[in-house]
Image 1 (tube, rainbow, N blue to C red):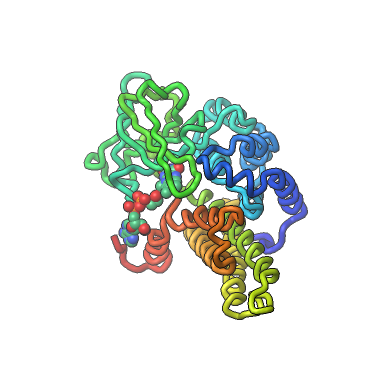
Image 2: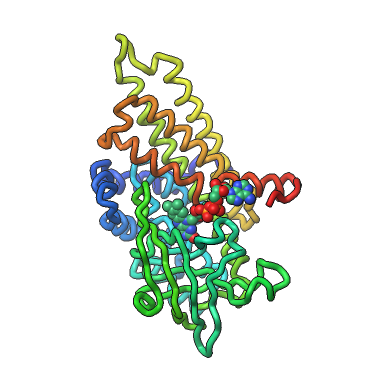
Length: 389
Ligand SMILES: Cc1cc2nc3c(=O)[nH]c(=O)nc-3n(C[C@H](O)[C@H](O)[C@H](O)COP(=O)(O)OP(=O)(O)OC[C@H]3O[C@@H](n4cnc5c(N)ncnc54)[C@H](O)[C@@H]3O)c2cc1C
């Protein structure tokens, strides 16, 4: 593994370029979007035009051909600037399933357009209302009928569905009782959402405590051309696992960015705010939680960097990706809590952006995978203890 704890010159330049772009989208911009629960179209367009969302797409398909470390740096800087990358982060990594498991024809069909931004592939249909984290119990069915599949079922928390042209969909092509292992019989499809909308696909927005453009989607006899099946029928679960590990590392990087935003903000306020004739940061009760969050963040950052570096070497990173996401989401939450507490009453005032970021960073202990499920993964698969569920 190459040296991971210091940025290369290339990564430093990427960070500087992202910082320059994000400076045009200050807190006021995000506050207005948050209040209206509106999609940050201008920000997403600017990021698309800059090419940052195509960081992971190989050059032959029009992307930058960079690795996970570069993509992580992009997302970290977005969050560190107080912006919200969740509006478009999935455009970066969902395409990885096509890249790694799609046919040449599929790659040529979709990747150049995803790289240019002509097509958005940023909806990922995995979660369902009834099965929760137990993905293998998913009920959405895709049945082959001639040259297409007919899809029936429902997904929930399908974020950005209204702002995406394509969706990566996970559906059962064989019933769970018909397969030897429950991981079999699940397939992955690329759904042309614009085509399907009104033709078997319905999207319903879900209003949440954050501005996340999340939805529930319903499939009623929705037709998907058989040529949109990725890889082999029935092997889809395996295909999405490596993509999920990449996602966890990138979400970890977003958490590091959030944590650094909170720590900068808390430190500045602690130095500036005078109460009882001295800066509040002079009190250890104020100083220590910020210092602790800083230490947690630095440690988590190392795990994010290690997981990204191992992924780039083609290693299996289940343990590292999960630990990176766990530690980083806990660091960002500790930093959020310290920042809000440091600001006292002003932490609750919208104009400080602390309450907005506080709400936003809380998500990461639940999605894309909850803390308990990561702990059970480590307990069982890393430490060899009995399966707990
Ligand atoms: C804003 C938002 C955006 C999202 N975007 C997407 C998206 O784009 N695409 C998508 O497919 N999904 C998305 N999700 C779904 C997200 O991945 C799930 O919410 C998450 O994985 C948790 O699943 P669940 O909500 O079904 O919780 P459940 O599985 O119902 O779990 C509820 C709680 O019980 C705990 N729990 C469950 N089982 C166990 C166990 N065996 N041991 C210990 N604890 C357990 C969990 O840790 C959790 O805290 C999103 C969710 C949100 C809130």
